[in-house]
Amino acid sequence: MKRILFTTALVSAFLFSSAQDGNGTMMSKKGTPILPEAGNWSIGWDAVPVLQYFGNSFNGNTGNTVSAVWQVPMVIVGKYFTDANSAYRGMVRLGFGSSTIKNIVTQDGSTSTPPATVEDEWKESGNDITLGFGIQKYRGSHRVRGYYGAELMINLSSDKHTYSYGNAFSTTNTAPTTTDWTTPLTNGGYASGPQGSRATEEKAGSTFGFGVRGFIGVEYFFAPKLSLGAEYGWGIGMSSTGDGENTGEYWNGTGVATATSKVGGASSFGLDTDNMGGAIVLSAYF
Picture 1 (spheres, rainbow, N blue to C red):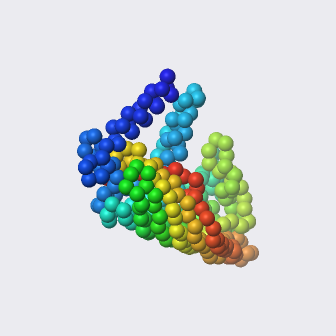
Picture 2: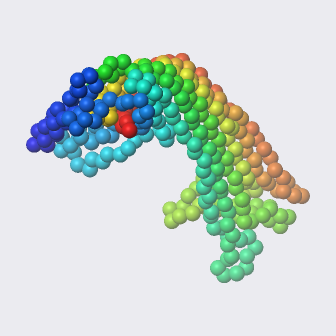
Picture 3: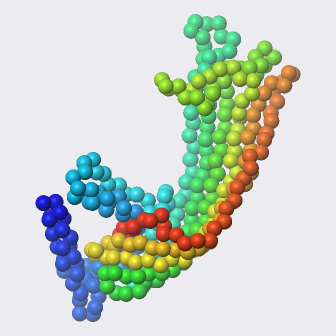
């Protein structure tokens, strides 16, 4: 029964939106243009979760969920039509953030019952920026429209961790009680114990990525200003990550000393085909 109802709904939607006016412009029976026009904007999503939802409903699977998955992970992707057959493509992500974790540890030298406590703190901050621009050209004036074009993309990202501690190094406390941030406890918080040295800052090298690609694809307009599409591309991509630094502190016998070590960077380069991660893109035009 589900299959019959779904098939009937698809056929009805097709018949409802398949009319053309006398000038060859595709219009719905309510007079709504089916294809994008000059001045229209669009936004896209990965349609695979939606298709899986309807596919699973046919085989009796339970617990199906549907969600608006990114077309490109964590990046807003859209188009702007300059005329019926030409559009600018754009993508943007401007990500900045920080988070702080605090952990309670015993205050060294405390004689109270229960012992007094102090806080250790771990703070992470970083950014992730992606920008892209391209030009897309369409061919065809019916529901199935081919397209082609080119675009470029850049990415910038960085990440830093800083640590502060409630128990300080001193001549009488050369291994203060310190949080072990790598060992979470089952009841919350982190393990702690005496440490002769500890991290104060971990800074990853900044990453710069750049890509240029040509693409070719197809869209099927199954309803007014709604389409499903997929594409293939070919292009150049490169990424470069600079050296990072890890800084720590320790007691050197007479005072607190710091030491910094380098962490090697990385780079990559590729020239190859792609299919946008296999995404089937659902686009809405308005």
